Length: 381
Image (cartoon, rainbow, N blue to C red):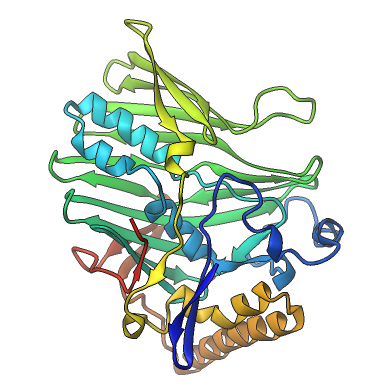
């Protein structure tokens, strides 16, 4: 964890989510497990937890917007470059499947990031990849992401709308929203969705579950992946991914996919029987670096790290009283701004995205700018 800045302004930036399982252990309050389970004592099964508020003892010192962004810009091996450089459409599609798996980040039991405030932004660059996020809705929570890589001529646009629900012994968060990756040199667009996040209380466990579909209309290729976890009786496997890659028109299976998103995933060629490791989590999550501030003056007041700066500093110092006060200050200010808009009959409009919603298609976010500019916060290469 580091604190960047000078003068009166400082910006707290922390370690990315990793595979080590204890990246955020130091942030937990005393009697952690007991306090965590007590949160759900009065919550009824089937309840929507969208507006559920955690106290700072259960927060990691970063916003959900930052965690969302890390899945795009925080990596060891550059799988995006691999997607672009593959020669055939089938090789590119397999690489996109691997990249999609790499965006499945390892959450940790009992802790969660801050809920982003309306209009919060997160702007980070890694080499030629520039990533910009904005919280485009607060009720319900919707985050938009736009990333462009001028060197590789790649663009991706994501819209994320999590819907968490309580089921007695577990919480499941369905992650709605469209995701698209464009390999502009090849004229290919890949559409995909996200798995669900599951938090099970007994035994304590966090995993990704559910079905993911990836399709490319230009190449006529499609993939179906099923994320699964073991049952209470040990059947199945933790963190498992299983599925297939096939031709959309004929439904002919070309590859079978199987493995674990936190270790390795293999693809088996149906014709030859040859198996190839297409994804290695250790390569993707190796030597993840903390972002640094290169241009303090360029940081927007809406930047996640600036919005939650005082809360994060208090959590890192384990000053829980101060953390609660600072968090309440951020949230109270948002309620005040919302009240002022309502009294004036004003509707808040995102600065970086055009947002639409329909019952049939859900939320959709389109970036206003064609390319994302370089950011004041940079991930060292």
